[in-house]
Image (tube, rainbow, N blue to C red; front, side):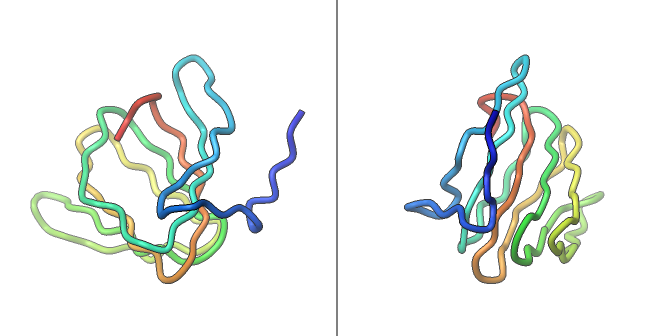
Length: 103
Protein backbone atom coordinates (compact mmCIF):
# COMPACT_ATOMS: atom_id res chain seq x y z
CA UNK A 1 0.00 0.00 0.00
CA UNK A 2 1.32 3.41 -0.93
CA UNK A 3 -0.09 6.94 -0.72
CA UNK A 4 1.63 9.55 -2.85
CA UNK A 5 0.97 13.25 -2.34
CA UNK A 6 1.56 14.40 -5.92
CA UNK A 7 1.37 18.13 -5.12
CA UNK A 8 4.40 17.89 -2.83
CA UNK A 9 6.55 15.76 -5.18
CA UNK A 10 9.65 17.41 -6.62
CA UNK A 11 12.72 16.10 -8.39
CA UNK A 12 16.33 17.21 -8.63
CA UNK A 13 16.00 17.85 -12.36
CA UNK A 14 13.33 18.56 -14.92
CA UNK A 15 11.37 15.41 -15.83
CA UNK A 16 12.71 13.58 -12.80
CA UNK A 17 10.34 10.77 -11.88
CA UNK A 18 9.06 8.62 -9.08
CA UNK A 19 8.36 5.07 -10.27
CA UNK A 20 4.99 4.06 -8.89
CA UNK A 21 4.27 0.73 -10.58
CA UNK A 22 5.31 -1.66 -13.33
CA UNK A 23 2.38 -3.87 -14.26
CA UNK A 24 3.18 -6.39 -16.94
CA UNK A 25 5.65 -4.07 -18.67
CA UNK A 26 3.45 -0.96 -18.37
CA UNK A 27 4.95 1.70 -16.11
CA UNK A 28 3.20 4.39 -14.10
CA UNK A 29 5.47 7.28 -13.15
CA UNK A 30 4.98 10.63 -11.47
CA UNK A 31 7.07 13.37 -13.11
CA UNK A 32 7.98 16.82 -11.88
CA UNK A 33 9.18 19.45 -14.32
CA UNK A 34 9.53 23.14 -14.93
CA UNK A 35 11.10 22.77 -18.38
CA UNK A 36 9.87 21.53 -21.78
CA UNK A 37 10.66 17.97 -22.80
CA UNK A 38 11.67 17.36 -26.43
CA UNK A 39 9.80 16.36 -29.54
CA UNK A 40 9.46 12.58 -29.60
CA UNK A 41 7.40 9.64 -30.77
CA UNK A 42 6.83 6.84 -28.27
CA UNK A 43 7.22 3.25 -29.38
CA UNK A 44 3.87 2.49 -27.74
CA UNK A 45 0.83 4.30 -26.46
CA UNK A 46 1.12 6.92 -23.70
CA UNK A 47 -1.39 8.30 -21.22
CA UNK A 48 -0.34 11.71 -19.87
CA UNK A 49 -2.35 13.15 -16.95
CA UNK A 50 -1.74 16.63 -15.55
CA UNK A 51 -2.06 16.49 -11.77
CA UNK A 52 -0.75 19.96 -10.90
CA UNK A 53 0.12 23.00 -13.01
CA UNK A 54 -0.62 23.76 -16.63
CA UNK A 55 1.05 22.09 -19.60
CA UNK A 56 0.87 23.10 -23.24
CA UNK A 57 0.99 19.86 -25.21
CA UNK A 58 2.30 20.42 -28.72
CA UNK A 59 1.55 17.65 -31.18
CA UNK A 60 1.52 17.14 -34.93
CA UNK A 61 -1.45 15.86 -36.92
CA UNK A 62 -0.94 15.34 -40.65
CA UNK A 63 2.17 17.53 -40.44
CA UNK A 64 0.33 20.42 -38.77
CA UNK A 65 1.45 21.51 -35.30
CA UNK A 66 -1.33 21.97 -32.77
CA UNK A 67 -1.35 22.90 -29.09
CA UNK A 68 -3.70 21.75 -26.33
CA UNK A 69 -3.58 23.58 -22.98
CA UNK A 70 -3.88 20.91 -20.28
CA UNK A 71 -5.07 21.79 -16.79
CA UNK A 72 -5.15 19.58 -13.67
CA UNK A 73 -7.32 16.56 -14.35
CA UNK A 74 -6.86 16.71 -18.14
CA UNK A 75 -5.65 13.60 -19.96
CA UNK A 76 -3.66 13.51 -23.21
CA UNK A 77 -3.51 10.19 -25.06
CA UNK A 78 -0.65 9.75 -27.53
CA UNK A 79 -1.27 6.83 -29.83
CA UNK A 80 1.54 4.99 -31.59
CA UNK A 81 3.25 7.39 -33.99
CA UNK A 82 1.95 10.59 -32.33
CA UNK A 83 4.76 13.16 -32.36
CA UNK A 84 4.47 15.41 -29.32
CA UNK A 85 6.27 17.58 -26.75
CA UNK A 86 5.10 18.92 -23.37
CA UNK A 87 5.80 22.53 -22.36
CA UNK A 88 4.86 23.28 -18.74
CA UNK A 89 3.94 26.81 -17.72
CA UNK A 90 6.03 26.92 -14.55
CA UNK A 91 6.09 23.82 -12.34
CA UNK A 92 3.95 20.83 -13.22
CA UNK A 93 3.36 17.33 -11.92
CA UNK A 94 2.34 14.73 -14.45
CA UNK A 95 1.34 11.09 -14.23
CA UNK A 96 2.57 9.09 -17.24
CA UNK A 97 1.49 5.54 -18.08
CA UNK A 98 3.44 3.88 -20.89
CA UNK A 99 5.42 0.83 -21.97
CA UNK A 100 8.51 0.28 -19.81
CA UNK A 101 11.62 1.80 -21.37
CA UNK A 102 9.67 4.14 -23.64
CA UNK A 103 11.20 7.54 -24.44
